[in-house]
Length: 488
Image (cartoon, rainbow, N blue to C red; front, side, top):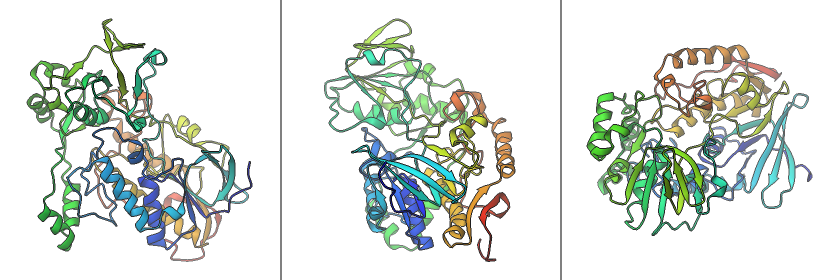
């Protein structure tokens, strides 16, 4: 291992939306700059850097899916595309001098708490050379998100025998040319709903969409903003923020009958019976539809509901025995969200993943702090997802909460905190009491551990700006003493 890097007070893992938001908040709100952001890729953006597949866009209204301190009056449409969102974050990184804080091509390999020093020992690896370096930090913010590890179905055999091109939306890469190809898309959730209508616009691309379990859909047309609207957002005080706030409160309940009718209005009649889910709305995340269902009317799009038995060298064999030859197979099958992607060891020689396993799935206090892991904060953690709300908004709420605890540490009032086990247990018991009686228990879903276990992802409530709690009564001081009455 190479000599240790200069120590930073705070280490942020990941230069995606959560990591950049954390860095901007530390700098802007606390005037604090003794931190580093480790990013394993060569550029910022997180999921908006990685997901470059055709049609990739925001599910949430973009004026809501923007940093609350840096609203943008010039968004082209109500739901922005991946390139536009990535450019927005590149602009913020320049504006707030984030590039000087980021160490690119550097993967965090391990994070382990040293109780004597009251610091984390961190091992990082240079992606290009493979060399390992150590560093230390008093505070760690994990901003890897829950769209980190692509999921490929483990029950489908033969992927290694396929001679065509095998893709995942998060591993799209440059130079993918689908013209004149026969493309199989596996899945019918968010990525597939954006990909299928986009690639099938070219009549030379033949698309076969393999659907095992249908989804419920909500209409999300990408409505252009007019020049007048953009001018008003830029020049009329509070107009843009009012628009954003109205978007926040417009997320309503899902009506079974209306959702059924929506599918029937937009999809071909021969598919209606198989496209209407057998489970109730809300059990899985409803899919934002901006042209997916209507694309089924195209002559170059067909649906296959037979189920996949295995992959063979030329394509897919369905459970009916039919061989479907394909030039390209895209597994739009989501991400592994119920595993913690990093080796992080806390006070009791326990890793975050082993703690999750002891709790039957991902568990954290307010989705942010984990007992036994002092001064460590997880963004986009367990039970922070609100259906069709802005995930960025949820992360900003978490960051507000974290700053209440980070400030006393960087000011020298205390050296470390942990959330008490009792507070975490009580909080999560309250959540699970609601979730086990909810619609989320009525289907197999990525919201649940291994698809059928504990409901670990959604928050059983609504998105609201008034959910940042005070922290004193749930937190135990590990090192140091409060020497100021105004710590909080």
